Amino acid sequence: NAGVTQTPKFQVLKTGQSMTLQCAQDMNHEYMSWYRQDPGMGLRLIHYSVGAGITDQGEVPNGYNVSRSTTEDFPLRLLSAAPSQTSVYFCASSSFPGRYTEAFFGQGTRLTVV
Amino acid sequence: AQKVTQAQTEISVVEKEDVTLDCVYETRDTTYYLFWYKQPPSGELVFLIRRNSFDEQNEISGRYSWNFQKSTSSFNFTITASQVVDSAVYFCAHFGGGYNKLIFGAGTRLAVHP
Image 1 (spheres, each protein chain N blue to C red):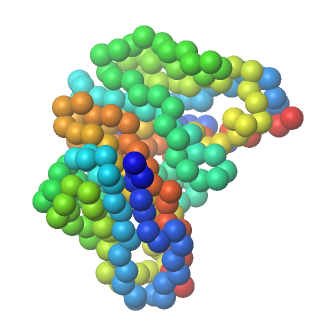
Image 2 (cartoon, each protein chain N blue to C red):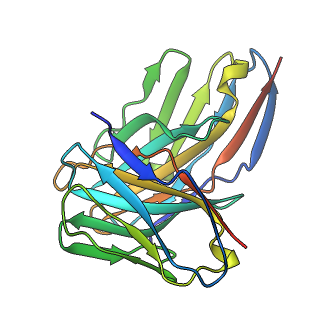
Image 3 (cartoon, chains in turn blue, brown):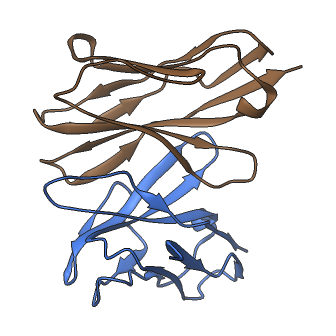
């Protein structure tokens, strides 16, 4: 089992560029989510999904889009990157519903927008 | 509202001291889960413990112990006889069934000095 795999690990974007952060899990988890981590702010929820075809907004959704066409994949799209989106991004998955277990996290993507 | 507060931003101790990390949560759910995660300097997120709202038993795992008190909405984490390897950022998190969101506190940075 690979667990939760995020790609890329590092990325530098220019302001206005778009990109997709990839996230895949092989644990057949229904629940997947994206967080961003900034100094002193902890992990803030961007978007989450409780199953294929279902997504919802978290605490800081602006500037990001998601879709969930399969159980395994949950990509995060930045439509027009801004310097304020410079952060470390984590994808997570967990089993759901009924008995929520701990979230398994990917290794993170360090994104810099210049 | 769903909120997790970790009031201690940074804690510095000398090796072998005991240290308690505080976590206070707000929730409207009657069924919910609480978690602690560790983030060492390498950056990955390591799951430490999950506790559901119906289980107020305190738990001990080696040098780690957790005190869950629903009456004060707190889920505190104590490290006994701290070691340099305990140096990390520790996050408390809450998942409520009504919200379907895993929300993190801002984290407490623990530095253990030899």
